[in-house]
Length: 157
Image (cartoon, rainbow, N blue to C red; front, top):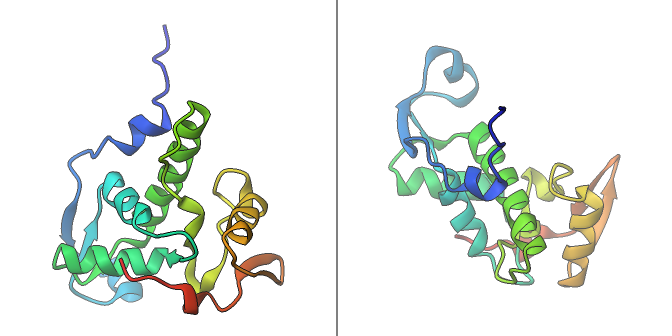
């Protein structure tokens, strides 16, 4: 019998031995420089996303920077931080479906440059509606959407 796929909430709470700080390898150093990289635990990314109040936003890069400081690493891993934000978003929607109201406000976490994340539940369109409901102005940038003057609403976490 095939095993049941883990729920988004189960994925969020499965730290798999993370966080972990590793030396930046030769292959990675071409892009990220030298030093160390922190690979965060999914729940850590979720906790930071939860700290963003209504009317404010943060970016994946802000979260990465905070994680790096927290773990005394040179950088926060761009790949896993992005993936864990995606998992946190889907876990929040899963909780919402179960009737929970205190969910992670994932729509307040933007990509670099204030871009909306089309991989979040409902895509960029759903994120746009949630952000506009909180007073943000969302504009189209080429084929993507971005929060206008997002820097003015940026919150340090």
